[in-house]
Length: 374
Image 1 (spheres, helix red, strand yellow):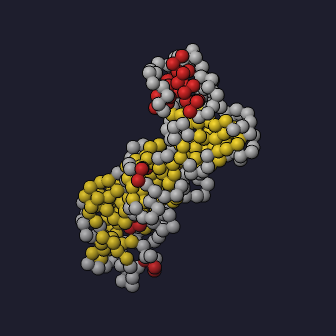
Image 2 (cartoon, rainbow, N blue to C red; image 1 turned 90 degrees about the horizontal axis):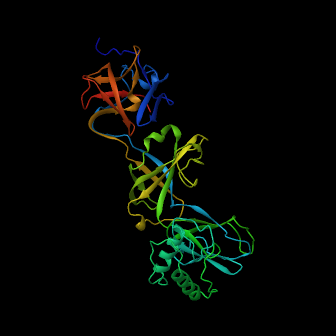
């Protein structure tokens, strides 16, 4: 009968009545008791919904926005190489480049050299290995190793001569040998995040003296473990920076395990951000920025990260809170047309931006569907 409302359906969204969970890139909708559309707050005197929203046709994205922090890449601890008092250390915020001083123990500087193999032994004539190659490359780059072969992993007499030139330039004893108390290897220029030992202390071998990072800016954020499927390595993101600018980037890593506040998840430093509270297991995610050199802002500044997710072109969608749990099972919407209301079953597609893709022959762009009163 015209004007009569079928009251069997219940709107699903009312105090979290629709549960939309990212599960490996898909979605699940759980039917839970919701708002009865016959309630006074949702109906006018003539029985029609107080609020309606249009069925729209357009692009729908499953992306989401989370809060994160702007930081620096590759945070790591630098342990002191040997016994003695710490007599000097580079200050927080300092950038140390090749051959620069990191810290002094007993007045003896430990200098930065570039390489991925740690400095784990005394290097002298006759030694062989990747660490010897690294040392040669650094001596060449600094102008002390003319004639050295950087691909030869043998510490030759020529290597010892180059080392002596380097030692002489720094006013050190010209031994022709290099020890752990002389250099530390890192992948490139290092930024001092903080000091872990005070000048005048004796930290002892193997104890942290500095926390270092790379110099390139990056972003960290966290997601609840249930939503981690929304982030995949290589996915593009857009970051809203301090001050309102934006930058593009890509997800570099997604933690392999979940822990409280993203700790211990195998994705680098635990100093992440975003993802909400409540003690839920979280996965930490890191983002590399496409033009990191131009990014400014204090360390650990708050940022917003927009995950692009999947985009579907030209689909019909309705507000999520317009969904009904139909008495016979499945889902539908209430179409309001010429003073009448009818329930129209729909097949659900992708969720995103507060809307849901709907499929059904009875739905057309521009139709008005009922939604719960605000």
